Amino acid sequence: MLLSEAVECILACPICKGSLNLQDMGNHLTCLCCQKLFPIHNGIPIFLNDDSRSQNDEKLFRDSIAAKYVSREKYDLLRFAGEHHCIPVMRIHADNFRSRLSPDSWMLDVGIGYGWHWSEMIDENVRIIGIDMSLGNLLIAKSILGEDSNVLLVCANASELPIRDGSISGVWSVQTIQHFPDSVFERFQKEMNRILSKSFIMEIYNLQPAILHRLIYRLLGKRLHRRGHTGQWELNRLSRAEWIRKWHTFRSGQASMDFRYSELFFHPDLHVIPERYPVKLEQFISISLSRVASLFARQGQICIESRISPPLTSCSKNVPA
Image (tube, rainbow, N blue to C red):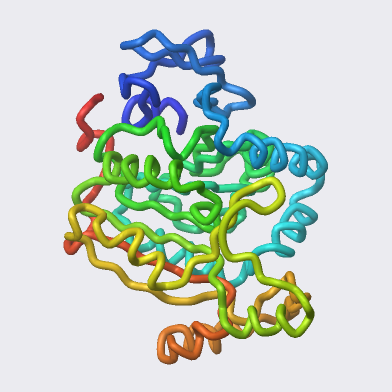
């Protein structure tokens, strides 16, 4: 049902942006303009461009990790995710973000990964398209979210989105943009400009190079990786000023920007994972003592939005591609 609605209202061919049609009992999608075929695997449309190789090593690595966990129970999958993300904090941010969008609107989660942000959704009026280039990640997300989820999982590249122009009210992303090479980031920004409606909210979380974090690494005789390739992927820990510079011309500089910090007390690489996380203390410090938070926060959050409230984005409001 959700896929059929998305095909009618919001999905488009990533190549020519033409409208799509479900074919062969839901086994694949066909572009009505360029006739390109896109397979559907286990309910997940696949829009990957075979010519894209800029992040192929990362994709293969994430698929290989996911293959080891895809048959695990939901509890085990969430426990594994909790080794890399502060689930209590990020679920609060996810709920707050979704609550700012109008009922029946569509939002996009870029790099949805295992989809755990949305596994405890109560209000499901907002429909989510979760994209990821790793089909393995999406199969795990499907297991965590369940069959009745209001999240449509889509395998696609962030630099070539299968989304209609001006059809998205909100974009959410956690520790994904930090892995984009410059060429991918530039194309991603253009895609955001294309798919976002005139009124929008965009909230992006990335690892940041906290001073205290760097000092601890130095005391241990190590160096905290800041930019460039590491292992199977690119990883860029950028500061507040660096992220703002990257986004300050977005929509011709007409959007407002805010920057805060999160995961202040969660540092898995330093083996700091509190059993009972001080959520309220983090909220107070990140809001009231932002400069203090910047010294040791693991994660930075940039919020970019239009200067008017996000509109209702329903099927009837969309203009077919």
